[in-house]
Length: 344
Image (tube, rainbow, N blue to C red; front, side, top):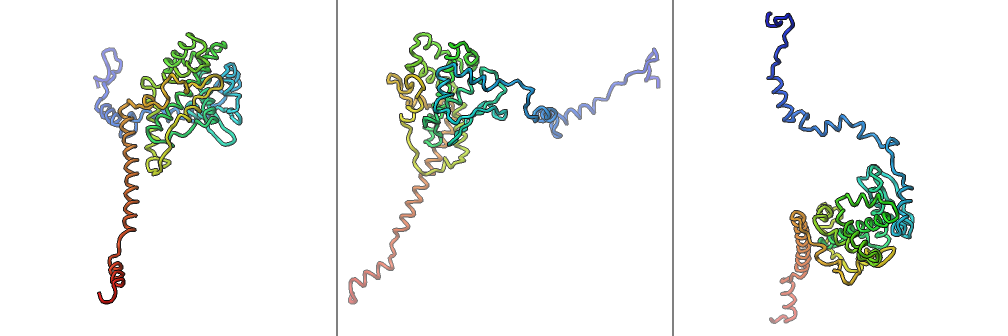
C-alpha cells in the first residue's frame, strides 16, 4: 500500500483509467443515445421554459400608437394609413409571426407585426403591409399562382418590389420630417443599394419624388443582383406543393397585361411610376429572367409537367372522340343489304 502515499505522507492521486472515457466519448459522438449529435434539441429542452413561455410585459414593446403617429408625418404614409385602403384595417402585434403579415378579408383586414424588432424596422414593416393593403384595395394584390409559371414569377417579383419601393419612399419622407429611424434602418440593411438609388434621384431633383422617377429607380434596382432569388424560390415551392392543383389545372390561365401594373403603380400622390413611357414596360422579359440555376431548373420542370398534363388530357379527349366514332360493320352491312334489295 506504499503506492497510496508520497514521501511526505500525503495520499497520492491515482491516474484515472482513460479506457472508459474514450469509449464513452466515442459513443456520445456517434449520437446513438441522442447526446452530442442532437445538441440543438438538447439545448432547446434545457431552455424550454424560456422558449415556450408566452412573451409578456417583460419586453418593452414600441407602442402601436407611437408607430402610427410617426407614419402619418409622411404624406405617403398618411395616405396609406388613413385613406380609403385603410378602412376596416386593424393592426396588431403577434409574436408568432416571423416578421409581418397582411390578411385580406371582405369586410375587415388585419396587419400583424412581430414586436421583437427595433422601432425603425417596425416602421418599415408597417409601411410594407399598408402598401399591401393598398394593393388589395386597388385590385393589384392578385395571387401569382393564377398565372402561367413565367408570369407568376413576374407578378410575385413586381408585388415585392412595389412594397419595398413604398417603404423607401415613406422612410425618405420621414427623414425629411425629422424621423430618421426607418431610413437609418434601411440604410444599414441588405436593401441599402435601393435606398441609395432613391436618395440620389431625390437629392438631384426633388421633382422626382412626385413624377415617379425616384420610385421607378428604386423599383428597377430591386431586380438587380441576387435579391429576387429568395422570392422566386418561395413561389416555386408553392407551385411544387400544388395545394390548389396548380400543376394539374387543364384550363388556360389569363395573360399578364399592363392593366395589372397600372393598378400596382398607382400612388396616393404623384404620377403612376410604372406608366412612365420613357422606361421599359414592366412586362419586359428582363424583369422575369431567372439567373439562379436551381430555380430555373425547378421552373422548367413545372412548365414541363404542366405541358405534359395538358397534352395527356388532349390525347384522352381525342381517344374518347375516336371511340365514339367507331363504325359497327355488322350493322352497316345489314343496312346495305336491305337498301340493295332481296335479289342482291
